Length: 370
Image 1 (tube, rainbow, N blue to C red):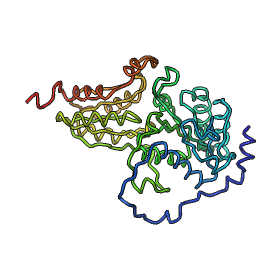
Image 2 (image 1 turned 180 degrees about the vertical axis):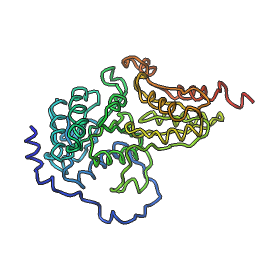
Image 3 (image 1 turned 120 degrees about the vertical axis):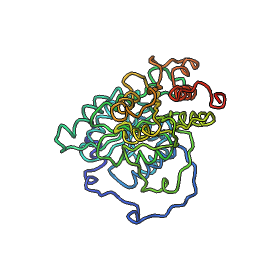
Image 4 (image 1 turned 135 degrees about the vertical axis):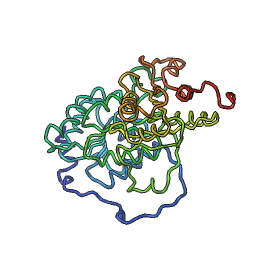
């Protein structure tokens, strides 16, 4: 099968140089007017532009072509780039992930879509043993420029086997980079960075965010736009408590910060963006300012992303803490199917508000206390 991919894409592509947008070397002036686009549109345009700029980039996965993607992320790409670069695969994650890794060995840049990251379990040997370890085991002679992307974490009513968050799973592995976007800016800038990166990247999207719209600047819409891997974003500045989150939980953290502000608590919200590498510097700088920390994630609590953040703060900023760290995570049970139980198993805005109040030693509002 790898031979088919090589024959279709052609070894001639290996010598092709990246096509840069005209005038990209020169400083650009951007309009300050914001436009709203959905996360789905952000991912679609990022894929389109990277495939246009670099003929070595191709997309493969179940229903990515004729059906235009299970969530329509690849809409229009088959028509534009043809079946040689938008490959519909059989339902065999282990098979097409292995083909993708093999193509990356030969210098191509595959983007492998999983219909849900729960299905990546079928291909985890290729992701970890073939993709993540090859650069180290070859003493740097083999690069594996591949992106594994798809929806991750809880959706709605899809049960225990389709609701897991894999951020901590893959962030545990040396050789992988793990990204998890929240907004349209995140999705567009981080996917471009992932495709251009010389190493394997696990790109964790969220099904419930695909249809969400976010304002983006003209700079974000420029084809040269790219976000740095390993750098978090302070979504909201504050001085009383630091709240870290990623993916859908960033929205919840921002809602909680708004509620807390009405009670006199100023929360600083950090959108992690990158799970591995983790931006420890931004997190610790924030904690040294606010002296309190709440971590938020929807995955299982044990050995989670929040646990790693807590340890980083304990190691680097313990003497700055004025309260114990609060960790908010999903319930330590398989995801229930019933809607009422499902809601109880995933962190809610109220959970973040209560944790921040505990960290600030506030059980009632400042107005009431006064």
